[in-house]
Length: 160
Image (cartoon, rainbow, N blue to C red; front, side, top):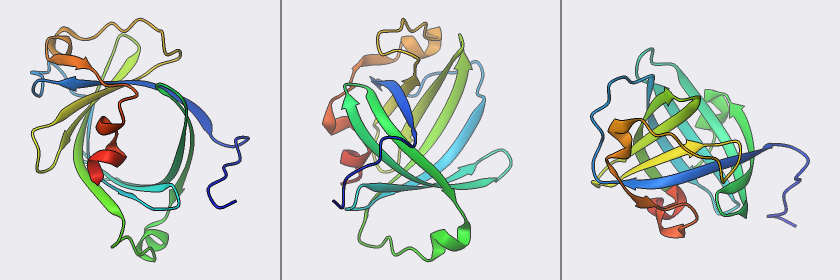
């Protein structure tokens, strides 16, 4: 089958997502990426990611399958610029965003600001979906509500 996925490869990704009121006033920032993502009809996502600090470019080919709310099986491959340039992404849905990463309390907080909208989301990768999250205060005060598992707040849906 075309959309069947071999669950022996890849890894389990556990994350919770939150909608923020505005971009937080951060005390520190670890990494900032400019990201463009394309979503293909066959279930693959292509992510062109540029580290703002050193202009390092990484291009990913990924496939995610939802296992349960906030838990996904994810397969990720890094592809070369030459492989990327051969792709015809013109008919794929696309999203552009800036991802700001803050590492604190043994967690990675990823704040996404989307182009052409005031929407700001936060993703936190976890070891367990029920894990307690100790948010940095500057981020916690901007949380409106959790959107984990709400389809309308997935990047794929936002790209449509």
